[in-house]
Image 1 (cartoon, rainbow, N blue to C red):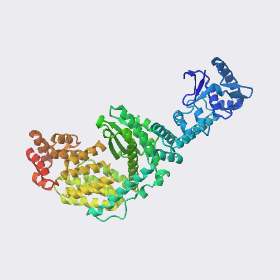
Image 2: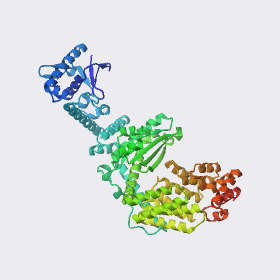
Image 3: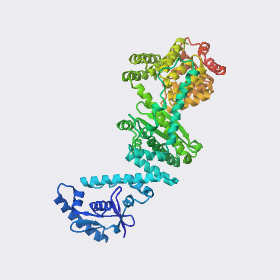
Image 4: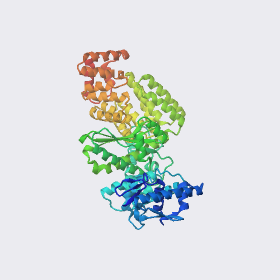
Length: 638
């Protein structure tokens, strides 16, 4: 009968049928040790030290003699000799035993790439993981063997990447590359291999074009806008933000850390989930290859994803700055993968995109999708890190800025005025802190909306602060965002759309910018596009502030979707902000009782409200849109 020794995972002896055969564990460790040696024999003294250590060699030799007696007895019972013994040495009988180690130590002249599937399976299962032996000699030997396994894997992988591979071979190559990355995340040779596997060289040029496109948009703004002259602080070029050398080999001073979570599944399509999981593997390879951020090992990401209660604590514990979260949903032609990049410090959604699998052959296109995700995310992380460094240059100002931001989330006059006070304190700490200027501009615009008195000085102040913010930092979206809001409320709708288009180009996944762009499009009498944009903003920021829902309600009203309008308003934390719109919607739905209720509530807070005076100052581009709003308000009883 032929026997085999399995050393990866649990160390066991197997018969020809693959069944486990009882044999002393320390005897199996001796077999593993002899199989990895060149001569096939070693001294009894060496084996005694290997199994029991150096402390009491006489006692160790006594233990070995007892073990040899048990081995001889068991070999006799099995009618097989795996080892023979003389007075000084222990000899391996190679002909009686095979092992999962043999492929790892093939002749150097062999093509090691043929062993790649075996090596992958071997390295995935930890070598002698649970062996009950703690001597220094054993531990050192086991660690040395693990290094040899990785070296063999790397050699086989390098050979495999130098020739055309079949589809099956590509899957093994990817798996091997991920194993290598988990073991040696900082090794330059590992990154070089990953570059070959992912073919990232072309992707670097794509990433460079992404940065250049944003720079061109910013530089073209003066020709299209009456905004003030540019600041002497230029937008960062691609070379300043990220270089090809950094991407491929050199770590930067602070490389952000990313956790790529396995895809969640809201779909019943299990086959699609398998392909999506394979896509995530491709994406992981791409991040490893680009080396512009550190990716935690897939196994660790899997363990984190399974924790539902203490995920945030784990992200902090492992110093994870960004999380790429993916979710599969829908069926058939509606099947899609939603991906979003989240900055963990403040839960900001930095980037997001939905891929519709119903319109794509995912099996054929997943490589292109993975490259797109990798390059987009790498670019967004670089942009976000550059911005973050600017924000944190003055810690005192930044802290005060965060305090002020808290008041901007609730749309009440006291909160707007408190936020303005806090932001002016920021400017006393740091006079050129552009985000604080943008926030002050926002408080003036919101005050104009909340008072409904048409005070043009509030909007002029908003425009002045927004313009000043752009002068200081023309590569940040917030200044253009607030300029766009101030412009639309003054009736300069085309200029507003232009400013917000640039804001969205600079931060294409900034939910607040998208929401304001949607609001401007509503004023521009383009409600369908506005509703699409605000729906996207809500998807990016599902715990949406009231302003998002207010915008969605306004767009729905302009589309004649009055039931949807009151549904959006009903989701607001403070629906009184939209009482006028509620009254008009219920009137258009024919419910005069509910319409009169909201008219009375509006009169309580604003007794002087007049429909015609209000509509004269509300910026709406098309007359049909203004007439529709007037009709609803008049029907309601205003």
